[in-house]
Each structure stands twice: as structure tokens, then as C-alpha cells.
Length: 491
Image 1 (spheres, helix red, strand yellow):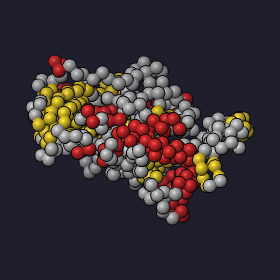
Image 2: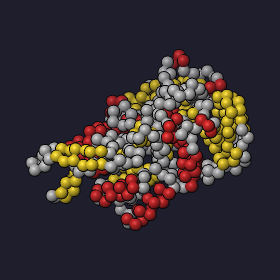
Image 3: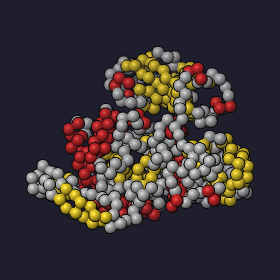
Image 4: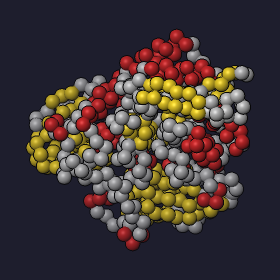
């Protein structure tokens, strides 16, 4: 319940199943304390709220069905004229978006904001709430989150935290407090994360977050972290069809983007077993996600020859224009090693290799089906990261361990391959830095085999400090490695 006026309280409740419900009030207001009542709820075919699926990297609704997350932002959603807002929401629904991202500012009219969230929900879409003004003071934060949770948690929402937590001083601590309060006051347990300039993974161990958010489509970040965390991920950095498909190949769902290419993505993915697709590495000439033996989706950014190792079956083959979704049927394939080329090299392409008869119906879907209903399909699991230096065929060549790294003059970095092999022919590399003593969590400070560190001042409260740099590496076969080095961070 929340206070809506001087003498008015509102109880906002969403029944999660039909039937008779009884309630009893607890209140510091004597006339309300202990009041009881009943409500009758008609059955509904609504799928229910969105939650993490049992198979780690995907989403499901309360009715046990998979959920295809596709979001875009609505700027100034609480302030734009209501007719314009209603028109935009209708347009986004027609474009098949399933989520709209909206921001609650410090001066937002919360009653109007809630009504607009209701309007989003009435179109069958989820509202992803960004909270731009979470107070740092714990008492003020508690009061704020209590009110926000009471007003919005009964609606179909997710919690998206701050607009970019890395930019906020003490952002991790603020979100830890707010996240724990949301766990306490949101009885519907909606998904929780924070938007990030790079990755919200720095807070994955804090106990409140159950969704990862990425602010870059760089596969050196998203694809690597997909192998490190057993949480679903969304990407808020999509501005083009290439961004969209690179994020998809990272194993992320789109949380931004607008245009025909988004609807084309939705139509294509809706016709796959998207809820079981995982990044797939037996590919040359492109990047892929797959449910092995059933469906292989390959993105060819730079058109040319592509080769895909598949489980030995017969497959339908199609080339798809990611801008429009137009399909070009190719010759059926049977075997274990598909090779081919797109119809032309004028743009990027999607290749789908699939067994149409094995694209299981959504209606009969079970989330634990991967690895149980088909002996050819391995179960999803988080791999054990190799950290034994004796088994790691890489090392950091520069900077040397123990060296000083300056915020004012960032250092060069480089990863050296110590044992060449076919698996080292291509690498995805994420460099993160953390001043453990200050508790802000890690920041992505570099990507790729070499470059220049970009270390934000918010990484530390006190400088000089001890900086732990972690290099996370994904080889061409999808095997993950980690190397830790320690440096001195100076001004």
C-alpha cells in the first residue's frame, strides 16, 4: 500500500491465480489495523510476470512458457503529451516489442507514471523501470524504495536500476542497498539488475541481482561473460542490425534498438527454440547460437564462405536478410560439415540450418527439456574456468606485473600466446580492473588482445591503490581461461 493523498491510501495487488482471495491489513493507523476482506478473481489467460528460466540464460513467464525479450526505450515517457504516448505505445506493440524501457526521474509524477505503465501492460508489454534518482542515504533509500515498490510492483515490470551504475559515485553500494530492499518489498520478485555502460556483472555476487545488463555489443565483453555467469543477459547498446545480431550471438536479448530489423529479428527468433539457443563455436566465417542437432543460427557480418559442424542429420537451409527478414531457401543438407556462401556479398546475412520437425511447439515446451528429451542435445552448464597457469597457453606481456598504472596516462596492454594451436586462431578477451579494498566492483578497462587501458576514476576512492587486473579469455572452441595480475594504481 502507498499514500496517494493526505487522507487516501491505495493497496495495489495483482492476483497470480484465479479463485477466492482473503486479505488482512497490518497498519500503524489504528482504524486500518486488522481489517479483513475477500475478493473473487476470475481465471485469466495472461502469461504472468517474467522470471529467470531454469536453464540459466533465458526467461519464462509464470505459466511455464518461454519469454522472448525484445525492448526499446521510451524517452520522457512520463512527460510527453498523453496522446503522443498512447500512439507510440501502440506503434511499438505493432512492431512486436515485448518490453518498453522507461525512466522514473526525481520529478516524475508517480501517479501518472503508474497509469502509463498500466497502458504499456494493456498492450501485452512489460515496462522496464529505470530509477534515475535512488538516494544514497540508507534511510532515504528505504523510504524511496518502499514507495516505488508499493506503487509499481503489482504491475508487469522489471527493475533496471540506475541509467549507468559505473558513472555514479558509490553506485555499487547504492544498488546493493536498493536491490536488497526491492527483494524485501516486491513480493512478486520481479527481475532486478542495473543498466551499465559496459557490464553489470560487477554486482552479480551481491545477492540481489538476477539479470545481467550490458551497455556494449562488443563480443569481448558479452560473449566472454556469458561463459562466466549463470544469469540471463540483455543489451541496451543496440543501434543497428549489426549490433542486434552481435548481441544475439553473445547470448543476450535485445533491450534497445528500433526499426524494421527489430521486427525481422523477432519473427525469425519466434520460429526457433530460442529458449534453448546457446553460443556455438564449431563455425568458421561467422558467429553462431545453436541448439545442437536441432537449430543453428549463424550471423555472417562480412559475407563470404562459412562452414558449420553439425550433428549428422538432414537439415533445411535458408539464408535470411537481417534488415527485412526475407528468406532465400537453399538446398537441403544432410551430413556433419556444412559449407556454403550467402546469395550475395552486398550486406550481412543470417544462415539458418534447422530440423523443422524438431522445433518443439511452445505449447508442449518444458524448460528442463535440453539434455533430457533428446540424447543428442547436451545440457546447459556453466563451464569450469581454467585458472591454472601451467595449463593456460597465454600470458600478459605488458604491463609487467607490479608496474605502476596511471589514471592520467593509461598503460598499454597486450596478451601473448605462449602455445600456438588451432584453438588460439581467434580469441575473445576481456580485461577488467578492480580496487578490491574500495568495494566498487570491477570495471571493463580493455577488450581484445592489445590496446590501451581505460580506467574510470570511480573505480577507487583512494589513490594510490592496489589494482587487480583480470584477463578473461575465450578461445575459438569456447574454452574459457582467466589470468590475474596485480598493479599499483596512481594518479
